[in-house]
Image (cartoon, rainbow, N blue to C red; front, side, top):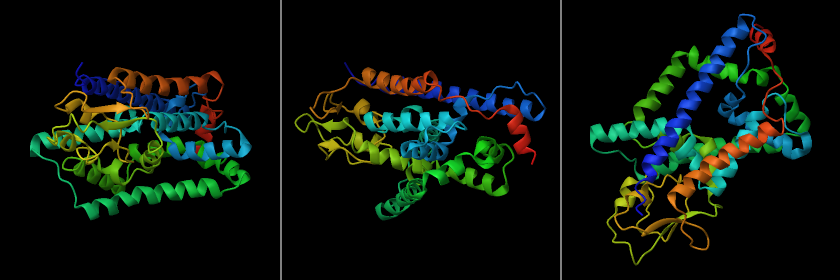
Length: 321
C-alpha cells in the first residue's frame, strides 16, 4: 500500500487541532470578557494552558523537585509533559501534526511555493547561525528552571503575574503594540519564501523537542538498494535534510511529517522504522500521535491536575490592579 494517504491524513489532523485551538482561544477570550464584567460563574477553558509552555517547563521543574504539580496552571504541566513524551516517542511529530503555529507556518510556505514556484533557503552558514538562536533561548529557560530552587520556583508559580499570564498573553495579541505588529508581520512575510522560519530559528520549544527526538525509537530509514537517488525526498523535506544520502535520518530538525516517505517514488525505499528496522504504517503512526496526546491530557484530567484554582473573580481583581 502506498504511503501517499499519510499527507491528506496529516492535513486532516492538523485542521482538527487548529479548529480546536481557535475554539479554545475564543472560549478564553469570552471568559475574560465575562469575568471582567462581573460574571463570577464564567468557566475558564483549562486547555488554554497549552499556550503557556514556559509555565509548563517551570511547573514541571517544581514537580520533579518534589513540589507537586502547581494548582495555578496545572494543565500547562500536563500538556508540556505530554508533548515531550509524544515528541520523544514519535519523532517531534507534535510540530508537524498538532501545533497550530506549525500548521499555519506550513500553509504559508506552501502558498509561497505555489506563487513563487520555489522556496528560498539561506546559505548553510547563515542557516546554522540562525538556528542557534532557538537553542540559546532553550538553554536559557532550561538553565533557569534547573538553577532555581524549589522555593523560588514555587514563588514564581504562585505569583499574581503567573496567575494571569494567559490573560497577559491574550492582551499582547488583542491589543498589540506597534512592535508586536511589526514582529508578527515580519514573521508572516518571511513565512512565504522561507520554510517555517519561526519554528526553525526562534522556537525554543521546538529546539527542546528536537533534541529529545534524537533519542526516539523511531527514525526515517532509507533502503540503499531500493533508492534510485531521484532527490525527491530532499526537495520535499521542510527541514532541508539530506535524506537521499543517509541510512538513518536521526536529526533534531526532522519533524516526523512523513513528506519524504509519502513522496518517495519507490515504495518502501523510505520508511519510519524502529531500532529493529520494523517499519511502522502511516495510519498506526498517526493514531499513536493522536492517542498519546489525548491520553496524556486525559490522565491529567482523571487525576485532578487540569482545572486551575484561579477563578473569574481572581482574574477580575488581578487584572484591575
